[in-house]
Length: 221
Image: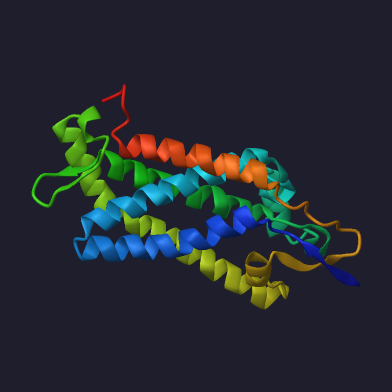
């Protein structure tokens, strides 16, 4: 099949993707070394980016929008049976869509538990801890400590799948997520560039929500 280079991923998608890849191990390292101040700051950065990715999944460019790649179980079964035209489609395939939703959901769950967690012995108390009782806070704290491995497990599965996809489907998924472009059929058109105003507005809203949470969610606590 004759192909040409097309834009696939806009900069907001690539920014959040690689930021997640850096933040998750950084948060693990800070927790393991009891650097709770940095751990909680990085947690709020992660929260900002999760919110931003959700907003961008609603108002972003074609390949960023959830509506363009979340297709349901029928599409997933078709993909797994080999009836999916890789070169004629840009963006996430149905299995990739599952990975996106799973990773965002697991990271949001982990961050949310950290916001409510509280440990009076090491000073790592989330800003929303006053909203829950002691028993609930203890449960969320304990779950937050081991649930990180669930997140890492999903990340590992995602990396393994990307590697197998490249080996057996001869599709380079990492290159386009770095450069934004990839080889597709001649019928596939460029993904439109990200509108800077819309992207920065979404980032400002996301940062504002995360900062409000950082302050302890005034009016709620």
